[in-house]
Image (tube, rainbow over all chains, first blue to last red; front, side):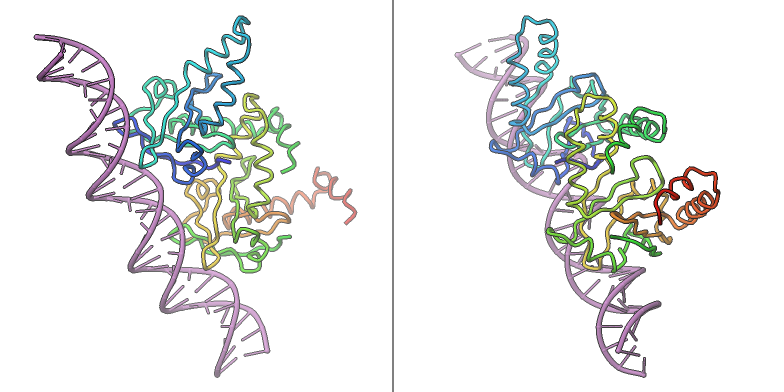
Length: 155
Length: 155
DNA sequence: CATTAAGTGGGGGAAAGTGGGGAATTTAGG
DNA sequence: CCTAAATTCCCCACTTTCCCCCACTTAATG
């Protein structure tokens, strides 16, 4: 389970150091291979999974009948933006420019690595801050839908 | 069960000594590992649980469908602010700067450690005082919502 | 008053994060 | 087909942060 937020630098070579505490979780049968893809509903962030975990999801999506319009669209989003990569010796990955653009990540700036349960999300620092504020406001509003939901969780 | 209030110092390194009487309760199968997170509805305090206790909650939240807006917001708040840590040899934890800011905790000042049943709450001294006064006033007011609730508890 | 436990402060070593150089591979051009 | 240029990958080295340990002060206990 991944959790917690880290700010790390996207260096001038487009590399990001994955926080050390996540690395063990990303290590699997085939070394430190991860799947990186963009958020399937257009949120300005990237998703990262251990490769073999996301592979199961991708296989399931790949087996949907392709002549169904909706399935085809889903397949397009899932597969066209899927990237397989290994952590280097220092625990970093190189983010492709397409992915960087989607998430608004600028070389040389700070980005947020956010553990979110079964996956890790990658945000620009500004976006992460903005989303957090929005979510916090929604949760503080006693009339919001999300307040009703969280009340059910019995924390 | 945790209860009672202690005032301790947040030192210049961001460390807080957990009152000794709570330490045994925080000790569990995996040493003295605790979960620290911010209040999920924005109250200016931190929550602390024995790790394995909060882990159950987190796993449950992590399994909610991520493409549902409300669940996604809840997951973001719960996971991004979750921190796992061990008490050091002196029974202290280091509070990350993000958490300190949320609760208005200033290095070098006194903070309040409040046992609150299943969890321990961490407040700045001022905030703890302010909240206590507000709660006291609400409970003294016979027309308040909280007065109606407490009457049902058969204390 | 003595002794132990609790709380506080600070220093040293290890690990994490960051930057950059050079080998290897790929791409382009003559 | 060979050479040159560019890109990618891997490794080394530096810097900073964090964690663990030691020591002191203060408070509680008998």
